[in-house]
Image (cartoon, rainbow, N blue to C red; front, side, top):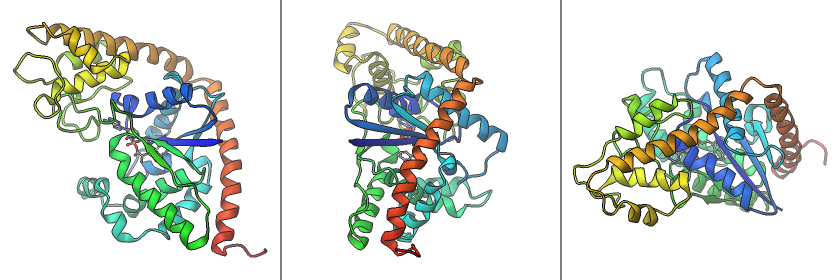
Length: 335
Ligand code: TYM
C-alpha cells in the first residue's frame, strides 16, 4: 500500500492557485490512484510561524476543511485532519530540526523572502525551522507521494535529504518521498503581474488574485481585467506572453482540455475579448459550484465528525511511527 500526504497552511483565504496547484490535484489523484492511502491535513502549526489572529485562524482552519470536501475530496477515501490535533507532528518536527543543519534552513528561498516581510514584527525562530516540521508531516506517514505546487519543491527536496540522512545514521526508518507537481498549473500567476505567483499575502491589489470565497461576479471581473500584452494573438509562451499563458493554464486546468486545443479554438480571434469573456464564465461557474457545497458544510456537524475521525486515524499511524523513531534514537527507557 502506498501513501500520499499533503497539506495547506491556513494563513489566508484559499486562492485559485491553491485550488489548481494543490486541491484539484488531490481530487484527481484520489479518483485515479489505486492502492494508495491519502492523508490530507490543514497545516495550522505552520500558520503560527507568523503572528495570527486567534478567531481568524480558527475560521480559516474550518474553511480549508470545508473547501477540501466541497472541491471533491471524499472523506471515505481520504483521512482529513487538523495537524495540531496529532501531536506527533511537533515531536517529529523537533527530531527533524535535530537532523537538519542550520545552513540548509537558511538556504530556503521562502525563508529568505518571508524574513524580509516579517522584519517589522520580528522573525520567529519557527519561520526558519518550518521545513523541518514540513518534513515531519511527510515522513510521519511514510509518504511515497507528495503533491505540491512549484513553490514547495525546495522544501520537498530537503525532506528527501533529511529522510536519507536519518536512515543512514540510524537505520532504515522513513520512506523517501517523491514530489508530484502537476504538468499544468504548478504555478498560477498573479493576474496583475504574471511574473509573480498568485498569492493573497504577496499581492498589492485585490485584482491580482481570485479567492475561492470571492463573489462570483467579482471573480469574473478579475479575469476580464487580468493584465495581458498589447499583441492580440492567443498562444502559449510564458516569456513573451506571461499573462495570456497564465490564463490559458487556468482555462486548461478547469476544463481539462489541452492548451493546444484551446489555442486552436481561438486562433482566428483578433482580440482577447471573447477568450477572456469565456474564461470568466468558466472560472465563475466552476467556483460557484464549489461555494454552494462549502456553504452547506461550513457550519455542519458533519465537518467536525469528519475531522474528529480523521485525527483519530492519523494518530494511530503517527503513534506507531514515533515508537519506532524514538527507539532508533535511543529515546526509549525500556527495550
Ligand atoms: P501553502 O499553504 O502555501 O500552499 C498550499 C499548496 O498550494 C500550492 N500553491 C500554488 N500552486 C500553484 N499556483 C499558486 N499560485 C500556488 N500558491 C500555492 C502550494 O505549492 C501548496 O502545494 N508548507 C506548505 C504546507 C505544508 C505541506 C506539508 C505540503 C505543510 N506541510 C506537507 C505538503 C506536505 C505551504 O505552506 O503551502
